[in-house]
Length: 394
Ligand code: LCS
Image 1 (tube, protein in one colour):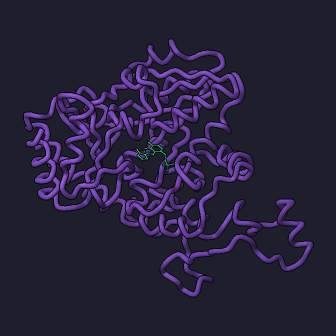
Image 2 (tube, helix red, strand yellow):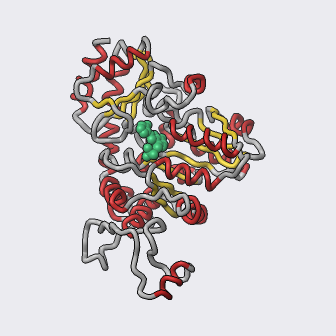
Image 3 (cartoon, protein in one colour):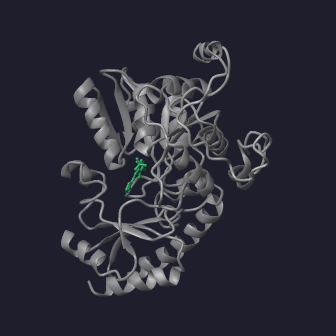
């Protein structure tokens, strides 16, 4: 895959960068500049008029960022990519570009807490509406589409419940109504799942997570058709201005080179931890995409190459029991975010999804007993020993 039909692993390392004219630098140069000198006033005029290609100002474009945007476009098999200062920067730019006042957005039955916050703001400020539905069947989706529905917004796997949605099925229904489907592909990364290949229209990422992989950058990406991404670049990216800085783009490019290796290792580790957790008497329920016993497994097999690194599980008892489990860990980190080298564990009801009102949160399956584990790249035996000793204290 990729623009010149290289395989994914090669694309992740090479796409979008040419060392010619860059002194042969193998590492993508870091253009840490905010602005660019014009050769003449007339050249400045031509660039602003769009008559001549070239950089103007780093909110509108930067050579290091351009490499990143070309690379993610190829990795997701889309026409154009855009980089943002955060995942929320990417999501807000895409959703504001797609919608107008009084529109309706149809959402998967769970979304990241701040995406919920963004939709709530759009509802209050612009009289928009949104519905959360399971998206299990075409009939259910058709029944919820309204004349003013301007976008279908899907997370799969859903943060934090790990429920899956059949992207090809959703894309087929959306085509009947000519409604664009936006997919948050953060939990899978393009190594495990490529929504555009399944007929969806736009992919957004919190690149803070697996794409960067090293826990040292906040960044977002969006990929889709050139025409739509050109519009985002000229409007909600340029004028709202949530652009990525060159150094963060450089770090992200470095992280993305090893995405395939890391995703395989995250998946290897998570599969082993899943097997151990599944058999532990203190675990009441467990959610992992490649769990062969889970009703969503056929969807996982169809659209996800592997299960990835996140496992959600429920223990018995109260919120206090969940907090005690986290407090009893010896070296695993109690922290939000995911996709880092370090194993991270958090309590969604009081952390990442605390902003969602309790009744809606419970409908999404985010109980007080639910714990989200982002399995890192450490030796899986060490991860398990720490989890097991904490579970045994419950
Ligand atoms: N989409 C998903 C699925 C996410 O998990 C997050 C962040 C975002 C978008 C927003 O990306 P950001 O602006 O943070 O780069 N999720 C977080 C989480 O689960 N824990 O901490 C942040």
